[in-house]
Length: 114
Length: 116
Image 1 (cartoon, rainbow over the protein chains, first blue to last red):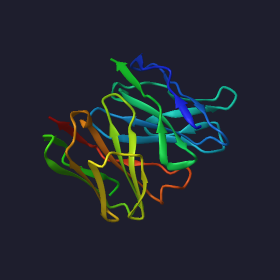
Image 2 (cartoon, rainbow over the protein chains, first blue to last red):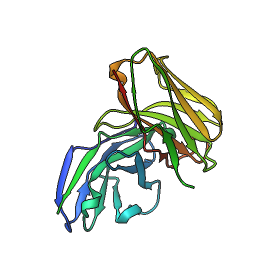
Image 3 (tube, rainbow over the protein chains, first blue to last red):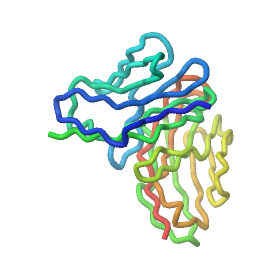
């Protein structure tokens, strides 16, 4: 069965420092992996996705994610955090390879401190 | 227009009330979704419409009744809800029929529902 895990409920980082939000996956076949962000009182917004190709995927708002097959990880990264990056981040994988059954991780609350 | 619009933003209802949530998109997307999200939890899929036909019902109780009047509109009719149904209800859409690998979802801001 396809699944993703986010081992950290919360991540705190100082503004200007690099940030990492972790995600590990368990999939059969080629993985399709997504990151979404949810700002307070808002719906989710797509950040980036990995389908195939380069292991480093660039997305919206300066975020990038590194796909690592040997470690079955897809960590979200940003070189320099902003206070406005504070939000809830979800890693996701399609269940059965179909987008209409997107399985989300438990979420990681990122707090960027001024 | 790259937005999914949901109304109302907030809704308080009693357990005997009937109410409806509305979702609209004008991006020409062919699949529309309802998700339920409890506070600080991941969204849980409820229903998927593909080309205006219900394609997925994730064993949702019948007190939730979805409707897709046309390709731009999605409704969720609520009747005899329970307090545990209080949550953020999110609508989403995707460009193709929802079965294409790598499709991204566009979410609305949600309706915060409180059932008293």
